[in-house]
Amino acid sequence: MRYLSTLPRARRWAAAVAVIGLLAPACGRTGGASQISQKAGGPPNADAAVKPSDLDQPVEALLAAVCEHNVPQYTCAECRYQIGVVKAADELFDPARGGALRTVTVGPRALAGGEWLNGEVRLNEARAVHIGPRAPGVVRAIRVDVGATVAAGQVLFEVESTEFLQARADLVKATAQETLAEAAAARERELYGKHISPRKDLEQAEAALQEAQAERSAVAGRLLALGVPAVQVDHPAPGQRKAPPSLMPVRAPFAGTVLERSLSLGALVQPGDRLLLLADTSSVWVIATLSERELAALSAPGRRGDGAAEVAVSAYPGRTFPGRVALVNGRLDETTRTASARVVVDNSENLLRAGMFARVRLLAGDAGGALVIPEEAVLEDEGRSFAFVKIRPPYFVRRPLTLGRAAGGWVEVTRGLSAGDVVVAKGAFLLKSDVLRSKMGAGCAD
Image (cartoon, helix red, strand yellow):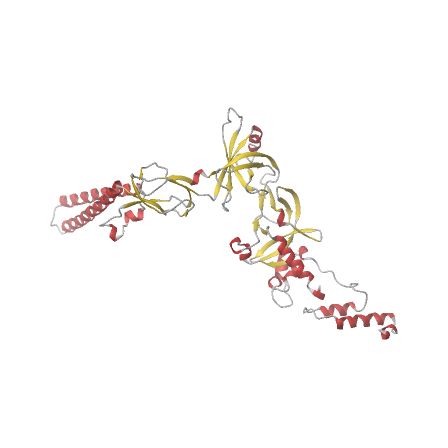
């Protein structure tokens, strides 16, 4: 140090920087020593070029960038954080595997909300049905219970029915008659072709064949009406041609969940009995009560019968479910002077149950709605708002946002995103922490 004090000021400064360069630990990044040597001629950062932020660069430039490891920088485990890119595997978005991240697709949504209305969650009546047998009989087998998820065509229970047994037997008989008539008609065609038998015999054989075919078709129609699949009627298994099944299966008309059961073994059942309630709960109806004022809002141009709405239930405080007004009753109740509206709500998470009390708010706003994302998807860095947008699975990149209005946990995006973009919502702050932590730990190269 005494040696440095004897040198002129400019030479002392250059020598001090050289000593610091020798004492500083290596950071593992190329270019660190050259940066120090470039600064040796003057005060720190005097001539250093300011690197543009990744938020100011187009996505195309970020994807085209090549890092010091001679690979696309957005794929490099060490360098991708410098351009605001993170890698998030599919399991991080899967709740079944403990994933803490969720994505949303950017799309239009109305923001301005009206008053909360009373409503009730009900089953989607277009996808809910009470199931009973198609012929009288005795229940001999029950294949499902309440809460079971069934596929379309799956057997729910089986009934011993004399009507079904008779129809099965008639099918075997009609099939045999049809086969015999086909053979007789073929024989008469051959004989007529050889001028051995008269044409009258051929015509009688063909008429008998048509009669046999009509008889079998009628019997097949009876079995189809009893719920037997067409493939089993037209192409019965070899063993069923002589000994048809004795139990009539009752099948699910569509995929859904069994919600109610009034069924027991040995019970005598009839057509029209409400033995099982099957419903597709992937969507539900919320019936809301509207005043004349809300009716006027729904009748505005461009929103007639198709307005946006949101639904809240006390079981999930702080959470709302987006919905769509699908139908408004054409009559007012003469006593309350109100009408009912049907709001269709997605229930793919199976959180909403029929019978729940609900609060419904009709959303008004710009025609077609504004592009919005959840508030939790919006992050900030040095005073700038951004979100993580999927570029190429499994990579997400920071993109700057210009924000507009906010309401009900949603924020309007006026610039920075397009409809259809996929952004990280729940857990986005974890990705931000990952990027910033890696940037701060980049060492002397930054």
